[in-house]
Length: 202
Image (tube, rainbow, N blue to C red; front, side, top):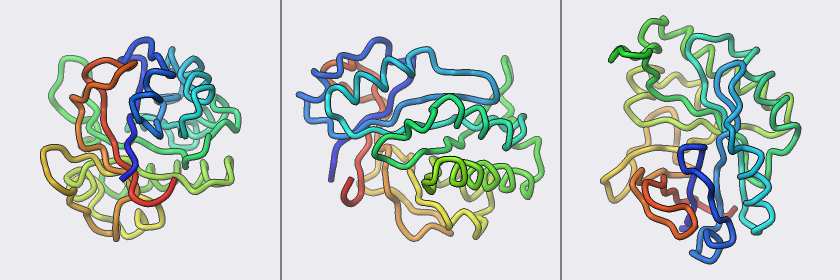
């Protein structure tokens, strides 16, 4: 399988030529979160990955507490059609309020959770011309989104660690990308890097 990583400002300054020399063939780069946040390393990471010849895509961290349409507008405005070679991604994962261990997604009825994800994906598809991919863990898909059949209209970037192969939750038939570690080490990107593999051709 094709080896990749995903990065945000948490990874600091990335030396993209070194990353390419290390055999990394693709990268997902955090662009936005919620309705106003732009990752401070987004522009630098996007330019660096492109200059190093690494296939790349961009992602948005979906906030459970903001409207999907507003988040999609923020994402599309920020990336300004620079989606890269890979489909754009909506990152859907547990989100905790400061000082709390309660997942904010749990405060929303399940049908509203799914509607938020689907509305965001549809807005991105219409705005970018590319069908987006959903990033989530198997348990999040099952427990927080109820394995809703509408999710199956999108490819899956699955996050599961410490297994020889990821568990693919319904309604997805397979996965397109697998984040198999959050503790990787890659030359040019340092330690504590998310490691991914691509299932199929880029």
